[in-house]
Length: 197
Image (cartoon, rainbow, N blue to C red; front, side, top):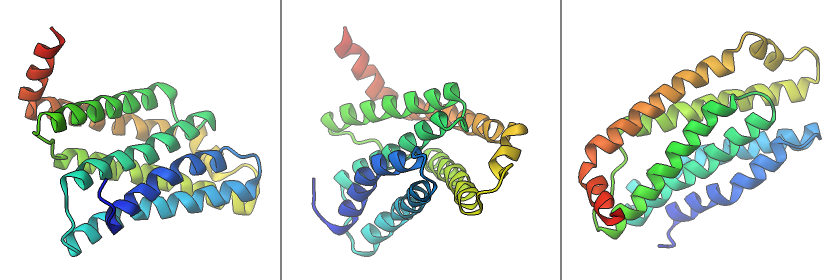
């Protein structure tokens, strides 16, 4: 790993992820609020590390690989927390996680072939929308936690299946980005198939 400021910020996102999950799942409302704040900082760091890498001319192959990986740590962790909190649909989250595992594994193979995979625009949009979805839910959790009243905003949303309906469309975008991923990197998949035989 190349230890420069953008990569250290990406590493912060990885390290923060399990703490975000643990705090969000806490029964203590104050700790839950801290988890929401930590998530907000980690999500902002996703913008910050990319901006600094371009500004400081520190864009590297390692950074291109590690930055989306750090995003996956954060988003997957929070998605799992939301499943346990009864907010997100487990099947839809499982599809999103399976896609992330698959693409990360293929990225490793591509790097070994010295043919690194660039993140597509669709994949970037997918990640942004996922972050937006998670950020929206985190903000609602923060509001509900600070007010401490019932029924909460989240109760109102869950009664109308709004989180799951939104997540369904995010999952469709995730599947489409996976199709593009395979289509645009067919040579890597062909190489992988031969190695398997």
